[in-house]
Image (cartoon, rainbow, N blue to C red):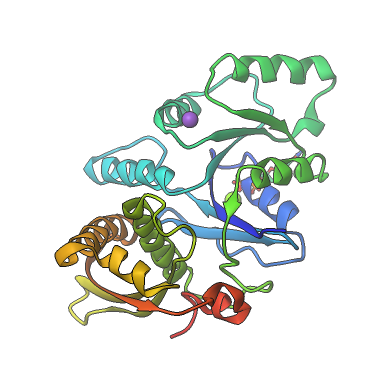
Length: 297
Ligand code: GDP
Ligand code: MG
Ligand code: K
């Protein structure tokens, strides 16, 4: 069976039960990474791993009402963050009306091409099924959500259904993290994944799947205004290497430029990106090798 993995954005107002939901999904398997106050960055909230898949949950800061210029920039970067995930989970609770904050989020979600799933949490609070059906209908009428999953994160009801829905939306991919979380540098993983995404985008399926990215160096300069990143793009054949580099290095340049721009958005700092292409046959068969991607110094 192929291993599937991917990144999922989790979005929703405070108090709807996002943290409780993450806890319920990952259970004892892995620690919740963070419940930080808003920053401009996307942070890893939790990682779910089982025999055949790994789901990396990211929270998406700055999607709420922009209050000023900085706020607007954060919203922009949140919108961009939506493009780099496999799906978006929007969490609401048992509230009968859609508030202003949620409306803003929903209008943002409507614009994205990424599939959006709605979780209606706290269903244990409903006195009868009719109330839930009414709410499902209200959200369904918006025509924004691919699927609607009612859950009670507190009681653990229907949480496995949500995992199945996410799973069915993931593509084949590596295990970014070991079964137990060891990294304190999830950003490395995000950066390497971003570069990999750009490589695949530029290749148009010419080198399907046989590409991995390892971050060799990621260090902020003393001046604190620029980060130097060097990364190796691994492929399986010499011919692939040629394709990735392109005529006069043009393809690699394009990959580097668009990766750099998105990493700058992700990290909120100027990036100096160096990319190298190396051939490593059968890297896919080496499990340890994959686990180390983006994780070692
Ligand atoms: P977050 O701010 O979205 O991360 O929300 P939290 O996970 O911190 O939950 C906010 C509050 O809602 C806490 O008191 C939770 O115990 C409660 N809560 C979360 N999920 C449920 C649920 O399914 N049912 C009920 N009744 N309460 C819940
Ligand atoms: Mg929380
Ligand atoms: K959508």
